[in-house]
Amino acid sequence: MSDAGDGGDEVIHDAPNFIRVYKSGRVERFLRIDFAPPSTDAATGVTSKDVVAGDGVSGRLYLPATPCGGYVGRLPVLVFFHGGGFCLGSAFDAATHGHANRLAARAGAIVVSVEYRLAPERPVPALYGDAWAALQWVASHADGQGEEPWLTAHADFGRVHVGGESAGANIAHHAAMRAGAEELGHGVKVNSLVLIHPYFLGGDSSESDEMGMALLRELIRLWPVVCPGTSGCDDPWINPMADGAPSLSVLGCRRALVCIGGKDAMRGRGKLYCEKLRESGWQGEVEIWEADGQGHGFHLLWPTCTQAEAQVQTIAEFLSHG
Image (cartoon, helix red, strand yellow):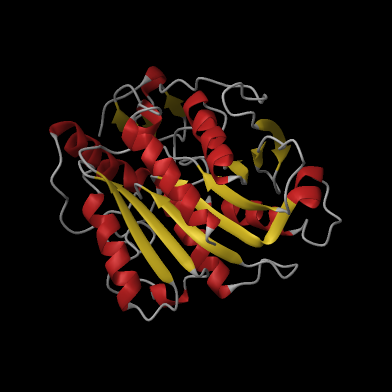
């Protein structure tokens, strides 16, 4: 792309209404973040607060409402990464905030929603380091000496899960892969992995409506912008099923759930991920759940629709057995 922006700065990527990236490194984001402050959610009783969740990483913690008789035992922890093509979105956006409230309430879990630093300023794979830092921060509380009282007092460090939606699901996958190769510390292991509409490229697209295919085309075009020097759509960072990608057999958890949308253009990639995981020799259990007729990220657009409620319930039940 050779168009010039203000002052003659060359535009190298322009996704109208979303993001414009210049050769100089300047970035303009047009997708407004509808900031939601931490609060006690009136609908669920979940309380949230903002934290520093590792070196250079912030986040928001969600604590389920306290039952009349107090919590019965400690609570599982879900470390969660928002979507946005690696370059947009926020843990503090109202839609993401609302989804985290519902997950915490339905699963009875402490949710750690991570505000990782965005590409292209912090490109792939560097931004994966923010995910690992957040996981290590959570693990640092396992001996009871951490700085965050909600974790030291209420977290069950034998039930630490990692998850995300879209690009956040990609980030969660790579965090779980790293957990299979490195120690988080303090004896903490990743128990389960939850992938919601994972952003994986490569191969053929699934059947989708025109809006879904338009999104897929934009994500394919965006990939080399957020991951400079990439080999393309079969780069293992964006296609963990590609030939030559690290073996999925080392995925560092015991269970995985993949949620897909019936009209999501990347639906087939989610299904293939499950197939390849089963074939890899990985010693865990994988489940897949599909929202019939729904597109990519539908649960953020229509959070109270029947399928969105069913997806949250499926995740909650999955985590309850972890």
